[in-house]
Image (cartoon, rainbow, N blue to C red; front, side, top):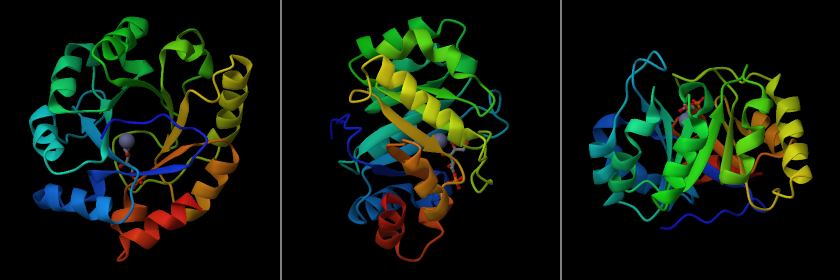
Length: 224
Ligand code: DX5
Ligand code: ZN
């Protein structure tokens, strides 16, 4: 259940955004049985992103249904106001967007102090310099490979050089073995291969998993 930070091994985190929302518990168990490493939970508030999904009460019930690590991606404004709720719901890792945090250092510290892993996400246009001074605080950097808000969008290839630069930044800081690099959006077996080559260690995929008849095969194809 507890999340293991292990950038040496590529992991697949299916996103429940593409699952059947009336059957979330069963869908979670399907990906667990199919060999998923983590479950990726997309929380949207209709403000930071133009879409709405679910929040802590739903996550708390999902927690009872699986042993998979819950990787919670907060696409919400002012995430610092809700960290306690998402921790109590059972998130193992909480990722906040740099664009949504005026006091990013404080929010990341809040997550760590609550005893869960902390991630920071960057939209496709957001420069890596925004996280340079918090790298020592995070367990994961999420490089968005689409503009957040919806599943089924096309991968933005301009993000690949950004991934390579992030890996160089982490190596320079001696953190390459301590920080996961996650990609999210438009991940297919083809784009997954490009991302793995550029240094991604956690691959999030909604459509490319739930859109396939054989989930185990779909997950294996992403892991490469
Ligand atoms: C997008 C979400 C993603 C989304 C990915 O805002 O953060 O996790 O579910 O969906 P696909 O894999 O379909 O692009
Ligand atoms: Zn996501």
